[in-house]
Length: 216
Image (cartoon, rainbow, N blue to C red; front, top):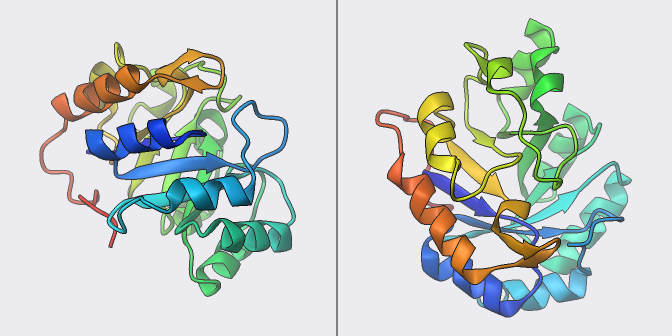
């Protein structure tokens, strides 16, 4: 089970995610979030993260040139786009040497037509609630029989108490959490990070060939 801990801001919480076995650590560059960090902060925080673990920069509806500049300055391995970005934006990021994640609200993804879904399913997808980072889960019924075919992460309202059940029901390739491991809004809790990763892995589905164990 691939696990991403997002919205990290301190060396202590980055280390906790790494030691607890996260596959990815995320840094938010989207303006307006209580978890936003600068490129310089992210570069410092990611300095001691092993290469086998993805460092992910999260952006939302920012100009692609700005995204590329910030991601290079932050020295992240992966860029996650969380707005209305296009397939061409993803191609630009691949050309710049980044791995990618494209986030959708679960509701928005289910409204895509077959051709649109096919074009996105060649990318790694993250399905979230309508308001990312708010700790509100989307309704499970939205994905009943309509989950993405490729690699996809489940996000939105996850926490140590519900992640195992949702993984067992929806069988994603992995999970992504931010507010669900916070003691206060924007403030991560080391103990909750550990408990979340343990809970997610306890419900790991069998036979999901699409999920990678590590980032190479």
